[in-house]
Structures are given as C-alpha cells and as structure tokens.
Length: 141
Image: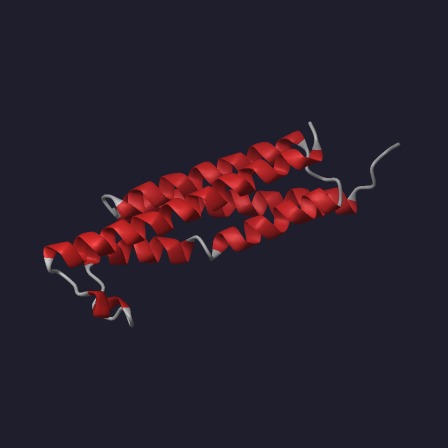
C-alpha cells in the first residue's frame, strides 16, 4: 500500500467539513425564510435557531479532535509509517466522525452521540500509538 493512502481518509474528513458548512448555510436560510431568524441574527449568533445551532456545534467539533487526526496522519506519512493498519484505523475514525455528524445534525441524541464520539476518540489515540511505536521500534532492513 502506498504511503499516500493515508491522505484519502483526510480528504474524506475534509469533504465532511464542507458538507457541514453547506448544511449550516441551508439551515440558516430555512430559519430566515420561516421567520425564526433574520440575517442580522447571524452577525453575532447569540440567537441561533436550534436547527442551525446543532449544525454549528457539530462544525466546531470537526475542528477539535480531527485536528489531532490530521496531525497524526501527516506525521505517519512523513516518517513512512502509514501502514495498512494505520490507514484502516484512519478510515474507521472518519466513519466514526461521519456517524457522529449524522446523529448530531438529525436526532442529536446524546445517548448515541457520546459512544460514537468515544469510539472516534479511541481510534485517534490508536493512530498516535501506531506513530509512537513506529518511531520507537526501528524497522528491520
């Protein structure tokens, strides 16, 4: 497997961020059309309608833990440590983030969101362990 395979999960997660930005736009437009909000309300979104507030909160989440994901993926690539296992774990992390987003912007049920977040958190940690092991254990030639 080429080392560049580690970039595909990163590209997929970035696509998710763009999708959520689009959803924010749509939810805010709906709020304005329905009279729940005016365009001025989004200047300083203290009166963000719940339908768009949950999406905004999810967008914020996509700039928290995923920052560590991007850092570890790039680090794995740089040190030639993007193994098959690392790429699979990276894809599983992305799947967890997609599932978290779907729950967050639909039902927003914490009972579902919390375990999904925890799975992603653990998967991200596993990527960092993979990186640490790759650095600590010299490769045999």
